[in-house]
Image 1: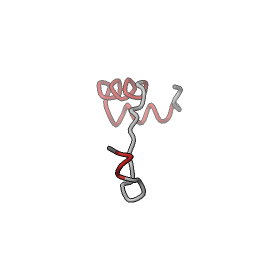
Image 2 (image 1 turned 180 degrees about the vertical axis):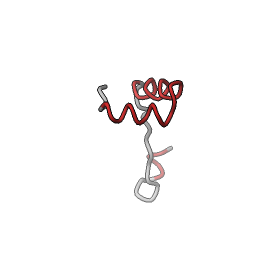
Image 3 (image 1 turned 90 degrees about the horizontal axis):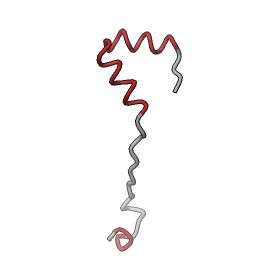
Image 4 (image 1 turned 90 degrees about the vertical axis):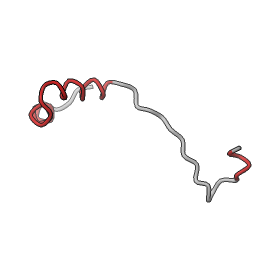
Amino acid sequence: MRLPDDFTKQMRTLLGDEDYDKFIRALQMPAPASVRFNTWKTDSLLLS
């Protein structure tokens, strides 16, 4: 992922080198997926 130079400079200033490196590694990881059912709109039998 290519981030704008101004953004990376600002984030490195805010976070410091160590946390900035963790931040960049976190951005490169796959995003977690989750599912939420609206129980007001979903039949409870479908959820069991």
